[in-house]
Amino acid sequence: SAVISQKPSRDICQRGTSLTIQCQVDSQVTMMFWYRQQPGQSLTLIATANQGSEATYESGFVIDKFPISRPNLTFSTLTVSNLSPEDSSIYLCSAQGSGELFFGEGSRLTVL
Amino acid sequence: AQKITQTQPGMFVQEKEAVTLDCTYDTSDPSYGLFWYKQPSSGEMIFLIYQGSYDQQNATEGRYSLNFQKARKSANLVISASQLGDSAMYFCAMREDYMGRRALTFGSGTRLQVQP
Image 1: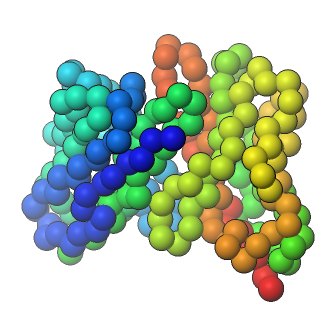
Image 2 (image 1 turned 90 degrees about the vertical axis):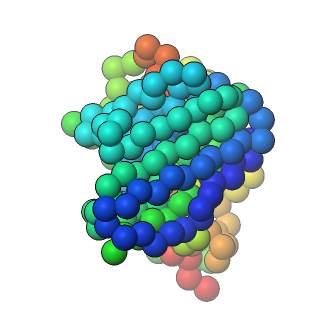
């Protein structure tokens, strides 16, 4: 199984600022994904992070708001830009291993 | 249409009893996978069990088993001998394999509370 580390684990930010979340996997993985979990809700896929190319975004999510990088097979970042209180959520990184999809511990963002 | 439906927002079970968490899914893809995850109050997503659409046997992992009824498109999670530490949110998820898409679609979750 893959071990996924996310940083920061939680943060409180002011509206209008941006937050970058880092995701590090302890082994090379083919696919990495970013999910959002709004309070009391289920997980919603934001995008697939593609190594060496632009991320593939789901409907309702755009690159200007959620820029994603994936420079190699073990690391990705998600930036949440121009923060508003509606962006308060848990953001989870996940990685595709040989079968299962593993998750990081999540980054809990609160926007004031 | 919902791809994954979990109709039980909350469930209670007595310690040491078995409990079934319901999950139905909707797909026209012949190749897909079904997953169950546990999310404790700390927030991390813990993988529990996986069932592939072509698997002949129901998946089992320790106290977890998946009751896979393909014709009914249901993939219920059975937890045997419930423990207090099983109290958490449980999410059913599906991966459809068309066009190489590997991301999961999640249901709304079931909050399980195990009572002593």
